[in-house]
Length: 67
Image (cartoon, rainbow, N blue to C red; front, side, top):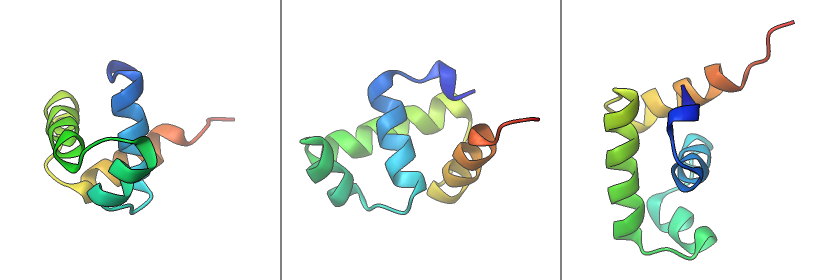
């Protein structure tokens, strides 16, 4: 379901799922922390998630490849 996200949203989601803080993500992607917050809000809305933990689980399950 990550396919529904934009390229930028996927980049933010993947870094947050690795445990990065908003500040770390913002620095790595040359964004403002508020932009990361806004992007996370959109990600949660699109994927029907409520937390960073749910996002991490969703990214992990989406990245598993079936044999």
